[in-house]
Amino acid sequence: MYNGGKVLIGILVFLVLISSPLWYNMAMDGSDYQIELEKAVRGDDCVRDSAWMKANHMDLLNEWRDQVVRNDERFEIGSDGVQYERSLSFTCLSCHENKDKFCDRCHDYLGVEPYCWECHIVPKEVQP
Amino acid sequence: MGVMFSLLAVVVLILIAVAGTELAGWRDLFGIVIPYAAVVAFVIGVIYRVLKWARSAVPFRIPTTCGQQKTLPWIKSSKLDNPHNLFWVLCRMFLEVFFFRSLFRNTRSVVVEGPRILYSPTKWLWAAGMAFHWSLLIVLIRHCKYFIEPVPSWLVTMQNLDGFFQIGLPIILTTDVVIVASLTFLFLRRVVDQKLRYLSLPADYFPLFLLLGITVSGVFMRYFTKTDLVSIKELAIGLVSFSPVVSSEVGLVFFVHIFLVSVLLAYIPLSKLMHFAGVFMSPTRNLANNNRVRRHINPWNPKVKVHTYEEYEDEYRDLMKAAGLPVDKEE
View 1: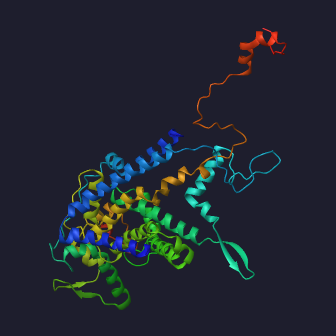
View 2: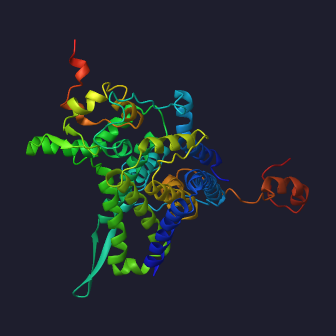
View 3: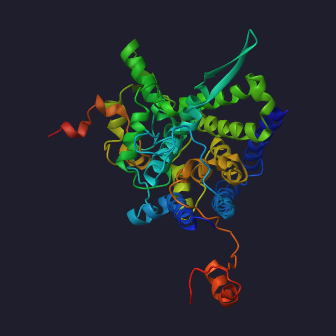
C-alpha cells in the first residue's frame, strides 16, 4: 500500500464522522431522553383528535391565522361539535397552559423553532 | 432502455417497501434490520474500496496540469494549477472537493457552418452539480437532528437559515427545492442531449432516480402527508444507540424513505457514487508536480545487485596493472 498513513487517516476520519452521533449522544446522555407532555386542562376535548393534531397542528394554526387576519372569521365548529375561537393564545393555550411543558417539549426535541412567538406572547409570561 | 430499467428498479424498490410494511407488516425488518445491514455494508464496502485503491500502483507523478510549472525564479508559475508543494496541493484539493474546479473548466464543442468547430465553456453541469451537492450536504447535516439529542443550537440556526424565506407552513426549506430541481436537471440533461443519452448507462440513471425517490418521499413527509416526527426521532436515536423501537405511529412514507436510503447506502460502495472517497485519491489532483525538483524512485523496483567500477578495479587491479591499463587507485 502506498501512502498508507494518509489513507488510514482518511478512513479514520470517515469512521469518526459516521459514528459521531453515537459519541455525541453518549457524551450528552441524550439517547434515553423521554418526552412527557403536560395533560391539557380540559382533558381530551380538542378542535381535532390528538393523533391528527400531533402531525398537522401547524397547518391548522396557519389556516386559522389566515381566516382570522384576512377574513375576520374568528370561530369554527371543532371535530367534537363544540364551537371554538380561532386563537392560539386564548383557545390552544387556555388548555395547554404551559408552553414550556407542552409546545417546547416536542419542538426542542425535533429542533424546530416556530415563529408563532415572534408575534404572540405567552399568556403566563405577562401575568404578575 | 437504461432510463426505463432504472425507473422500474426504483419503482419496484418503493413497492417492496410498501408491500413489506403495509401488507406483510414487517415493520421491524424495514425500520431496523435493513437500515443496520445497509450501514454495515456501506462502512465495510467503502473501507474495502478505499483499501483496494490504496493498494494499486502509483508509479509516478502525473502532471496533467493547466499552467506553467515552477521552474526558474523569474518565470511566473501557476501555483494552483501546477502545484509544486504540499500547501498548493492542499489548496487545489480544497477547491476541487468544495467547488468542483475541474468541472468548472467544462467545455462544449459545436460544429458550425463552414464546417468549423467551436469550443465554448459551459457551466450548467457545474452549477447543477454544485447546487445538488451543497444541498445534499446541508440536508444531511439537517438530518443529524434526528440522531442526536439535545439538538445543538447551530443546527437549529442552520435550519432557520434554510427556511429564510418563510414561505408556507411547515416553512419551505430552500435546500429541499434546490435538491429536487438540480436532480431533475441532472436527469433531463442526460435525456435531452443526444450525445449524453448515448453515453448514459443504467448506472447513471439509477442513482439519480434513487436520490429523487429519497428527496421526493422526504418532501412528501414534510409538506404533504405528515408523520409523527417524535416517533421517527425515537427510532432514529434508538438506531444509533443500539436499542431501536419502531412505534406504531411511524407512517408508510417514512418506510419508503428509509428503505430507499438503505438501498442507496448499500449501493454506494458498488457504484460510481464512490467518487466521494475517490476525489481524495485522484493522482492528477493530489500529487504535487515536483518531478524535476525531487527524484522519485519507482517503489517496486527490484533490488539489483550492482558491481561498481571501484569494486571491479579492486578485484582486477593486479591484472590491470600487469596489462598496462590505467587504474584510478594504485593500491
